[in-house]
Length: 402
Image (cartoon, rainbow, N blue to C red; front, side, top):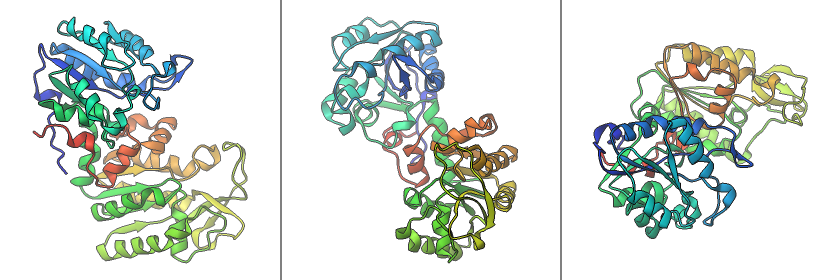
């Protein structure tokens, strides 16, 4: 997997037109941005391009307009907020065809250090199909392409892959670079011991991840709903816990594979059980703790128990690299969040490089207040998972090699 990519630090964009693909897929409520984390995260790359005297043309998708203009998914509010965050005007090019008369005129009139924002790239139906016509339109605006949108790196679209193939200089921005440095390299060439922690509800979502990480890590820890299929594969009674019966044999294979490769595979030794799933999800619940080998037939496990919390925390202590993807239980419920908190705490207290692989675990770590204690929190959902599967991401592959 080629992870040695040229970045914005390897090029000089003075006087050049730079198309920069960002992730401005922010939540909107009645035209107002309700969470601007992604805008703030994009600022270092944008500021670098401005400071170097580039003519900065920003683009992004927002939501799923499915190839047609939807006014409620326009990037106009983003241009307005970015202007405030940057302290300079970000001119919005309002074209339903994205690269239209407004965009062309705005680019024509740009001075070095100016910034414009194009309309939602998914207004064009070619975008998600990587259709050549839209890629050519985007490429016609610029001399240099910068991709800083990790969230879509696992998809080959016009605005991240198609355009990169038509522009001579295609590099990654700071956010992408950080994802490659941490997430990509943690899996490909980790500092050992390397401990991987997987949670979340379904084994099926993580089949390739489990398989790949077993080959790469020294210890694989499995918690969350997916652990019960493994416990069942070992012959345990799991009561009414979440299970994927079609994957029991797969779990047996993975247990055997870990054994054969001499890897440690840690499963929960006890579980916090409840009678029935909380509705709403944060409703009060009565819990009882049982060893994994002695679960009652009429209860379901919804978090790892105290012995497991200790076991998992102990495994993290001696690690040099830890990657974590997926919560240990139903962390949305305060009573069933203890296991996830314990793992987050163990990661916060270790000197190891700690990488949170996107999705629910990123949300959990941030919600629980451990965000600033982690070395890296990935911004991708699907993209992070595919990195952990050892797949080459089209959005990364499309950038020039060093």
